[in-house]
Image 1 (cartoon, chains in turn red, blue):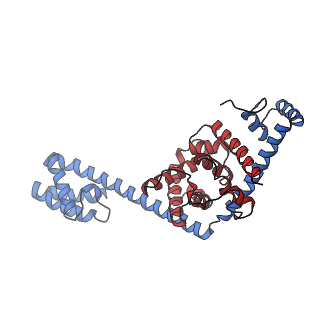
Image 2: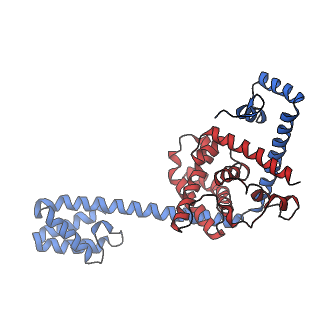
Length: 165
Length: 171
């Protein structure tokens, strides 16, 4: 094992956890989530030298994860919609406010009224903890679009949650 | 995109203000406006409250997806294993291809390139390998023996001995 291999190995466990969460939130069972996470780790190991700007690592990582998820969805001939939260039980913000949803699921229920791309952005921002720039890299969209969509989503969600109180 | 969210301030302005990225002078001017404008002040309150709620809810959800560390290590070990196997296969394949090139270069002046191609294929197929390029390290000695015997028929025993020696030296 070379020095860079050792560095990769110590980082890989932490990345694996993040990736399993990324795929699980998108409705994949744990086994599939782990398989896809392993595929992503292998790709980043192979292509790590191609990454010129180390600061955009997480954006790049999630871009690969997104592509792997897309390929998986296509292979299984499902609707090629990246963040389709239909697997969630029907809900409304009233349920959340009334405490009918578990605290862990609260976030996913809140973002349900948003468009799929907006949901995707919000998950990357608040679950995966990415910066605006990393989200732009991961989704291949302009930085300004990311900033606007997050700001706009927060305004709308605040309105929905305030109404339902 | 130039959208005025509220009064004279664009969303760019708002995002920079909320992220603390606005220039000092602009920030002071906006603060002044927020002190007298109830509508803008409410917007700020709502967005900041929503930001805090989202961060908290996101953190809770993140925490609920903890993966067993032993399991994570096992998965990473599996990755390494796959990477090693793939690397070994690639290395093996490159090495076999190099040897085939050497043998081909030696045999072509004696038998002609078309005959050499056929001889290589025949030697591989005798050990149930589809093509010489698909040979593995383990099968190389058997392949070499077959090729030597075919060369003996085509070009005589001295050439066959040379092919066998060259194949051994190259491996």
